[in-house]
Length: 403
Ligand SMILES: *[C@@H]1O[C@H](CO)[C@@H](O)[C@H](O)[C@H]1NC(C)=O
Ligand SMILES: *[C@@H]1O[C@H](CO)[C@@H](O)[C@H](O)[C@H]1NC(C)=O
Ligand SMILES: *[C@@H]1O[C@H](CO)[C@@H](O)[C@H](O)[C@H]1NC(C)=O
Ligand SMILES: *[C@@H]1O[C@H](CO)[C@@H](O)[C@H](O)[C@H]1NC(C)=O
Ligand SMILES: *[C@@H]1O[C@H](CO)[C@@H](O)[C@H](O)[C@H]1NC(C)=O
Image (cartoon, rainbow, N blue to C red; front, side, top):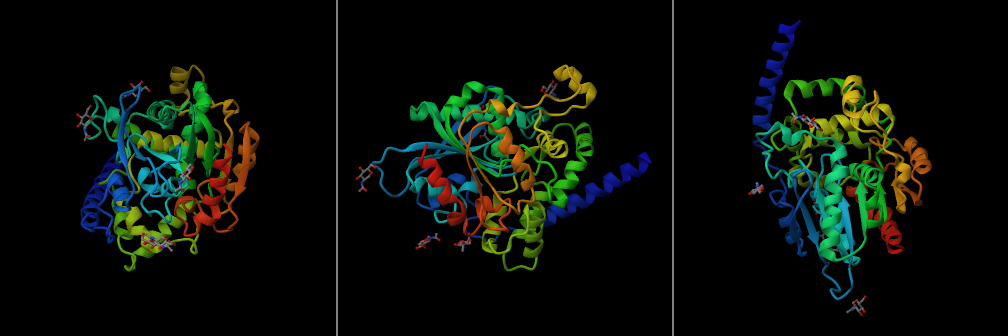
């Protein structure tokens, strides 16, 4: 049995190395694919600043800022902080340019836009004394740390630089999870957020429709087993098998492989043909998916499996040792009294719409709940849909303007 497992592992390893080697020779066929976040913002003729923020536990994170749009510069500008989803980064709020990407839309509307990238993502792979490529301890974190260290560090930094007492916040998917962790664990931060916009709130993740997400949720214990085997480590980093696979199948909109790219996206996020712009796929794949820690990844699927919003589950013994109780403690969302607007959709295969009733009952100060009026609108369409401006951003701008 053991020798079978070992030979299987060795075989898998060899096949992976060969495939990665093959995949990684293919470059995305898009003129902007080689740019980083700063360069792509400049490419679209917007001003950009790059800031480094150090968290209480030593992670060095990047905050990108688009201080103003191309229009009226003399206006007083309201700071807004944007936080991306799992496997994403600031890239996903800017790469499609002024007509499509939320950061520019907000910028033209008079906001001072700040884009966070959480620890472990392409732009935030640094630490005051750990090396992400050498030290397993760098990857020893769950989503909890994003909520209690990364997000508070971003908020404090923006407040200090803009000399404000409070800011607007928009989170997408994992960006909403981080917010509700911060709000329930560090209540002194509640008054620092004027208004929170939640795109596809993801802290109740029960019954994902995606077969892939469901499989991972059902099998998080096996994933957790890998933690012991591989130690703490990065998943979906730049040279990783899945990232290389996505770059490979998405690299050219005119290749037949693009159908694999589309089906991989759709089988995770929901089928949404009409809103998909095929030519953006090579550009998206240039920097997405990007790194997460294996432990963070397991935490997400624990939440999807249990349907509850709780800290990392170490198993009965580990929980007793860590938390003094057999079950991981729940986050108390009822503490989060910030005005919150919820935006969700019916064809979201990652966050099943059936969770929304519970979200609405649990979050104490929901000032708006908006279901995107398009049956096929999927999880990724919140950022990438062709008509996301009309379907969603215009409503958001209206809601933001009231706070
Ligand atoms: C720019 O915005 C300010 C404040 O909103 C306004 O008073 C001014 O008239 C605007 N200027 C132009 C050229 O639109
Ligand atoms: C954005 O839209 C405007 C008008 O709708 C158009 O003139 C412009 O070429 C578009 N820019 C890009 C980069 O697609
Ligand atoms: C990481 O941060 C250290 C400071 O702690 C700095 O000297 C180094 O240049 C940074 N590395 C990268 C790749 O940015
Ligand atoms: C990981 O972090 C926990 C604290 O959350 C600590 O108890 C443990 O020793 C760390 N493990 C490694 C390998 O750094
Ligand atoms: C589709 O994406 C391409 C490449 O990013 C972009 O140039 C084009 O304007 C987009 N088209 C639509 C309809 O959004």
